[in-house]
Image 1 (cartoon, rainbow, N blue to C red):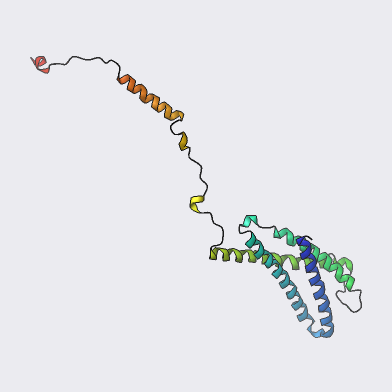
Image 2: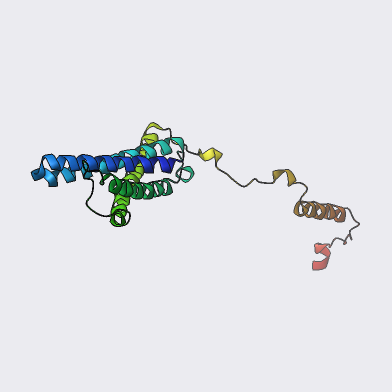
Length: 202
C-alpha cells in the first residue's frame, strides 16, 4: 500500500474516532462542549504533527543532503485529501446510527466544506512538523560531525595538461626558434679591421 494512502486512511480514522468520542462526551457533559471541542481539535492536530515530524526526521537521517530527500510535500498533500474526503463521508455515514452523533450536516457539506477543513487540519501541521524535524536532524548531524562534507582537497578542479608540455605547438615553435638562432651564430661573420686610434690622431 502506498505511503500517502496509509497516512490518509490513518488520519481519517483518527478524525472519525475523535468526532465520535466528542459527540458522546458532549452528550454526557453538555456544559463543557466548547472545551471538549478545542481539546479534540488540539489532539488531532498534535497527532498529524507527530506523524509528520517522524517522517521529516527519518527522511533527513536517510538522506542527509536536502536535494536527495523524499517529496514529503506531495505525500502529505495526497494523504490530507484522502483523509479529508474519507473522514467526511465516514462521519456522515456513521451519523445515521442513532447512538452516534458525529455530525448534523448533510453528505454534500461533509465532502466539500467539512473535507476542506479536515485537509487543512492534516496537511498544515504535518508539513510544519516535517520542516522542523528535518531542521533539528540536520543541526544534530552538524553538531556531531556526521553530516557529509566535501573536503577542500577533494573538491573538483580542472586537470592541467602537464603531460603535453613538451609536445605543444607553442613549445615546439620556441625550440625551433632557439635552434635557428644557434645555427645562425655558427655562420661566417664579417671581420672588420681594427682602427688604430693613435695614427688617426696624427
